[in-house]
Image (cartoon, rainbow, N blue to C red; front, top):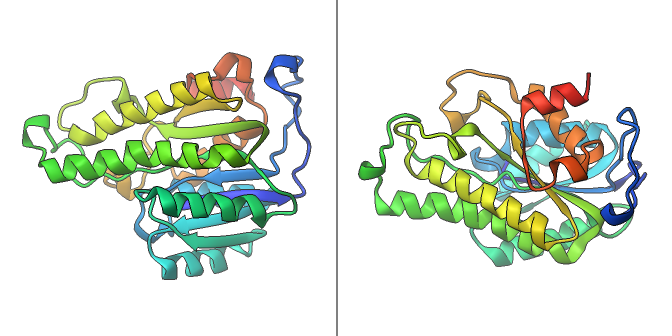
Length: 266
């Protein structure tokens, strides 16, 4: 899905601010009252990681607000996800900061109480075939659109969410090793994911919120060219863990991979 926002519901336990946060029992979950999942690469937002994560949070009792560029797709996805819990939606293009501003205002008011506890900025597009997009062959238009969506879109999601963030909010941005390891033919997409990770580090340094990059490994979605890998539903619990149990002192501003997640949840 292009975007999801979650706010309110029965997930209401909260942690003290980071400066006063004691060591937590890793078996205990910090339950978010408001979660924002930013744009997802699937047109219309009807499948992929974003939908799986939205479904997981809704099932846990949070209120979910989804977004996509196509309003009809938003309505259809809201109807489908409503079977899991409380879900609303609004048409949003992450490339337009005014759209994102309106979305955040809607999400902050949509639940049982005001504010957003967790932002999951999924904004990403990949306009070419993975492995077949060398830097010297990237059209300028494709490069610009990729960066505008994958980097500026994440920035806009974080920037426009900031006035509505609850105490001890968390910002989660999915990424992959292509952001840090050179792989032939990944072009603008690799550049953009590196930029998105830089936004995470900056947000963690500048905001009261704690920001994490989540390296999901290879997930079988249209974004990755459906080349196989994990199902989106297999990585959705990683977002729940990051929103509720991950230690900000250990992981804030860092890349958190599958190994760290699995080690922490054994």
